[in-house]
Image 1 (cartoon, helix red, strand yellow):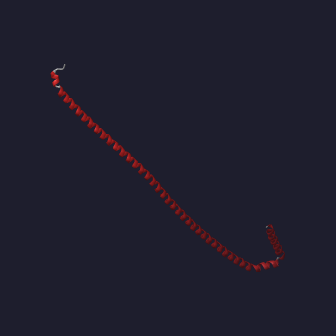
Image 2 (image 1 turned 135 degrees about the vertical axis):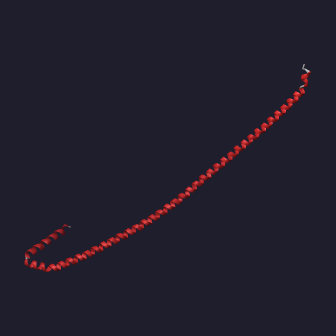
Length: 166
């Protein structure tokens, strides 16, 4: 059997064991609650992060669409600018061609007028020479009629040969 001295300590040991078990249970429960709260807090943070990532993805999709739209708008603006520039260039080229045509026409008209003036001057000089030398030519033909006939027939033959070639 058990000693009485040991038995007297039994209720005290039981009370202490019970207190220890109760304290240990409270500590375990509190720790479990803290763990549960910690896990819930971590899960809440993970859920918030997932929501933030989803929002960022949506924002990125919207940004990509916006950039695409802006690029299309700027492409359209650039095309319109190039079209305007091409139209201006065509107009300018047309004006330059017209100016070149007017310049060429003016130059041709001046050259034609200069040629007409030269023909008039030369015909006047030939007429004056012929008038001055007709008397001399008549006198030479009267003095040498045979040479004048040979010379005229030679000139006629030469002109006839030139005309028959064509």
